[in-house]
Amino acid sequence: MMRRLVVIGGVAAVVACAVLRQRSAERAVPGTLPGGIGSGVNAWLNRPLYRAIAAGLILAADDVLLDVACGEGAFLTEYATHVGRVAGIDMSEAKIRLARQRLADRIAMGTAEVVQGDAASLPWGDDHFSAVASMDAFTLFPDPQQVLAETCRVLRPGGRAVMQLGWRVPDGTATHKRWGTAWVWDEAEVRRMIETAGFRDITVSYVPIGGDSRLLSLLGRLLMGTDELRLVRAVRPTTEASSDALAERAGVDAASVIQPHPLRSTG
Image (cartoon, rainbow, N blue to C red):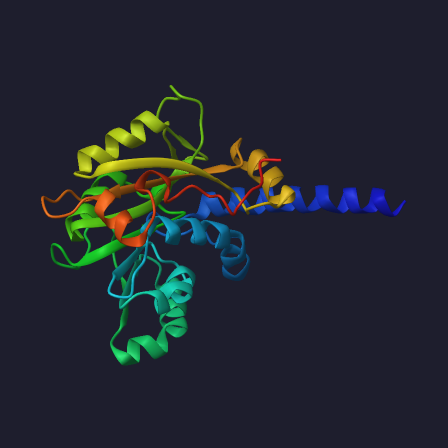
């Protein structure tokens, strides 16, 4: 009896989350994170993704890190101590207010800034950041190609970006919008977009939604048809540095830096 109740409760939770996700997608504001599930739950769901992105960026104490579509600043808050300076941008006034509260101490020290603005027109000069992260956002941008170009522009030569660009879909899937708001691209199209923006040394990897959680894996398959998010690591070209050199500095192989080894067992 108890087991049956647990199963029924789990199914009810899946259905409820599906409804929330759908409503969130319908209300989504271009250039912001969907907020239907709630910021606390969102941060918890994204923690494995945060780890994979941070590992791909090979963060160092002298890095200047930008989070594009930073939402409530959860990623910046978690990794601010790993770098010299952090910055975030988001379209949502409410999310920026929360991000500023989370980073208040560092803002007061001058080692953090969070601005409300459009990711398609970043308010920083060329070559400003050494690392850029982004998650849960590119599929909602009206013009993701322009955001990629801006991301490359504000990166220093040799700077690296790790961005979540959608989720795994079959090769050959035509570009379209799901739920009327979320872009869907196959891997070949994503690589073309990244190269067009000016990036090189591109590595595409896939990370499981929610790490080892079977429930979150089920939710992903139910809501998006897959339980794997797509991460892209890319480097702004330079004659002085390459992604291989950056990886060597950290003692890792550039082709493997975003492999999500701690997130899901293969057994």
